[in-house]
Structure formats: C-alpha cells, structure tokens
Amino acid sequence: QVRLVESGGGSVQAGGSLTLSCTASGLSHNFYTMAWFRQAPGKEREAVAAIYTLTGRTYYVDFLKGRFAISRNNAENTLFLQMNAVEPEDTAMYYCAAAAGHVNVDWANSDRYNYWGQGTQVTVSS
Image (cartoon, rainbow, N blue to C red; front, top):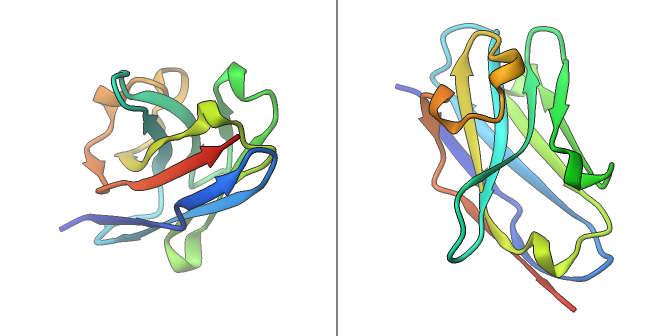
C-alpha cells in the first residue's frame, strides 16, 4: 500500500523560505513521477512542480519564476520542495502526489497521479 506523508508546512512571512517534505512508503520500484500540487481556498488544485525519480528530470510551472525547487532522495524515498521568496499568493494546502512511470509532458494533470498525501498547510503573511 502506497502512503505519502507531507510535512514542513507552517506560517512564514513574505520573502521568507520554507522546505516541504514528502515521505513515501510502499512504492514497489524506483521510477515514479512525483509532484507537488497546491490548492488555495476557493480555487482549484494546481500543479507546482514534478520530478521523475529515475533520471531526476524536473518540471515547473512558469509562474514560479525560479522561486521553488523540487528534489528527491531516492534512498530515503523522500521528496522535497524548497520554497524561496514566498509571497502571500503562495498560501495554500500543498499536496504530494505520485504516478508510476514517466508522466512527462502531462505532468501538471492531476488525473495522472494515482497516489496523494493528506497535504500540509502553508500560510504566508505580508
């Protein structure tokens, strides 16, 4: 049974930094596309970034403008999201997701992901 558990959320002031973690268990192999999505109150869930664990290839949404960085530690089955220069608009519940294989160009489509964590809340104050 695959389980994803996010941690590291909290409250931070605008301009600050935060690192989210997602610990995965039950993954049967080492080639998954793992991603971060977020959902703000009253808004739809949106993709943030993804990484293909076999090669380390990363994907980002354009609006992040280089502020966020996704990485993973395959040995520890942990996914990270380094958030820098955060803005109040980054306030949301952040979710970790996993899909078997290389999702590639469709990485931002939440329907492609089979496994989801419960989320960790990030609140950015101005």
